[in-house]
Image (cartoon, rainbow, N blue to C red; front, side):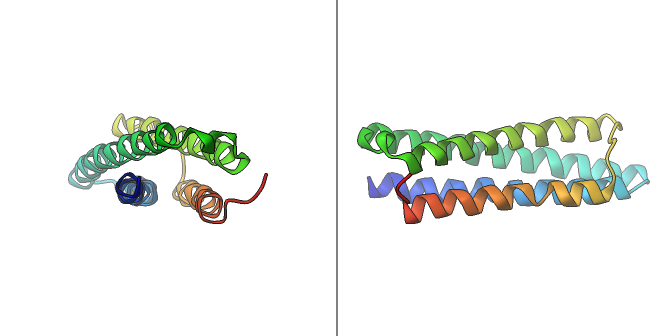
Length: 139
C-alpha cells in the first residue's frame, strides 16, 4: 500500500505541475501575435498537456488501486468528498483541453486576465484535496 501511495503522490505532483503551468502558457499565448510565437506556444501546450494527462491517469489509477486494496475507506466521508474534488479536477483538466484546442484554432476568446484567474482554480482544489487526505476529518 505504501508503494501505491508513494507513486500516487508522484503522479499527483506531475498532474498538478501541468495544471498550474498550462493555463499560464495560455496567458502568454494570447499575448503573442507573431506566427513563430504562436507556433511555439501550440507545441509547448500540446507537450505539456500530454505529460499532465499521463500524470492524471496514473494518479487516478493508483488512487483507485488504493481504494481497491482498502475498500473500507469508501465508507469515510472525507474520501467521498475528496473523490468529488478529484472529479472537479478532472473537469478542469478537460476544460484546459478545450481551451487549448480553441487557442490552437486561433479562437481564444478570453483575455490574459481571464486566464490568470482561471489559473487559480486548481489551487483551491489542491488545498481541499490535501487537507482531506492528510487530516481525514470526520464528515
